[in-house]
Amino acid sequence: MNFKVPRGTQDILPSESWKWQKVESIIRNLCDNYRYKEIRTPIFEQTELFQRTVGDTTDIVTKEMYTFTDRGNRSMTLRPEGTAPVVRSFVENKMFGYPDQPVKLYYQGPMFRYERQQAGRYRQFVQFGVEAIGSADPAIDAEVIALAMDVYKQAGLTDVKLVLNSLGDRESRNAHRDALVAHFTPRIGEFCSDCQSRLEKNPLRILDCKVDREHPLMETAPSLTDYLNEQSAAYFEQVKGYLDDVGIAYELDPNLVRGLDYYNHTAFEIMSTSSGFGAITTLCGGGRYNGLAEEIGGPYAPGIGFGMSIERLLLALEAEGKSFTQEAELDVYIVTLEESAHRKGFKLLNELRNAGIRADMDYMDRKMKAQMKSADRFNAKAVIVIGQDEVDGNVVQLKNMAEGSQEKIEDTMIIEKIKEQLK
Image (cartoon, rainbow, N blue to C red; front, top):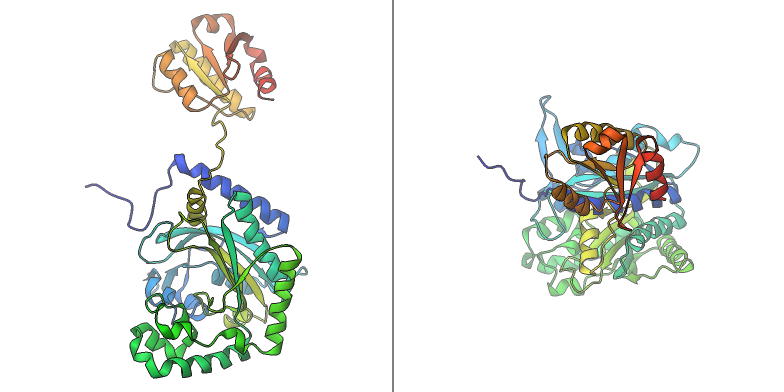
């Protein structure tokens, strides 16, 4: 029987995984600069956590979650997003009692959603995200957005734009909700069944519908920004002011609502503007979620965060015709010509690695020419050649691949010589 990778997933082979490592390195360094610390949560959680926080009318909960019953007859779900698990951990581990607030966290790992596979969108995908929990300062909203923008900037993307909206507080959203119900009710029969069920439960979700996005009522739907109360409007102005202060450009989109129920106040997306990227342009999305910690049994702890697809970041780089520079894979490749030389080469290989030098050798008993070709493919900076003469003379032949020079080096001096050459 021939087994294949499950539909909607992918194998990331060594020819591509180094690019992921580049992105991961950028992320770790930036998070360290911003003082965000890594958190690692389980891949699966209680199903109710996502139903309660993400929203039981969202596509994620109703159509996309991978849910199973464990042997204890408990309903469990592979995490479809990262915020709910992080906030759950924040509450469970009483991080709200930490002396330094807000608690600034980042995560990176696989998420799971059962949806149709498209370019850069998989059923198992890798998401990087940050959460700043414990502060209602609009400046932290701007900081989170700045961190997301910095990831794309340092990765080399230029064709991106930030889209911004405010969802307001509960009072503002309730007023907007009533206006949406009045707007859509007379013609709700023209909408899909999902929108019809959302009319009373959560009419804001109608604006996020992929099926009816071209319906004329979508264009004339009441804008949430028109229903922001004085406090919500003032908060949004401060967020925009902080972004203006640090030179982060943005576009306002009153129809940006995001796909999860826990968002309020600031909502944002970062999109690719590259002509070769494709129809689905969103690279990253996030927003504020005051009240989420309370929803899962914790104290009031306002938060804001974002989730970013690594697959889509790499796809955006490809669309812009950009790529990372791949460093040489090896410092040294050892070529051996005899059995006794192979033994000596293996011992030297171990010594090189213990000295922090990236090294490898042939294990296929190939001729010298074939071994040298391997050294070229690995972009080895140096090659050590060992034959019977070198074994008998306690020396090796060291070839500098960049210069093309070669010299005989005593065994006791080889590591020192290579380190000097690598400098």
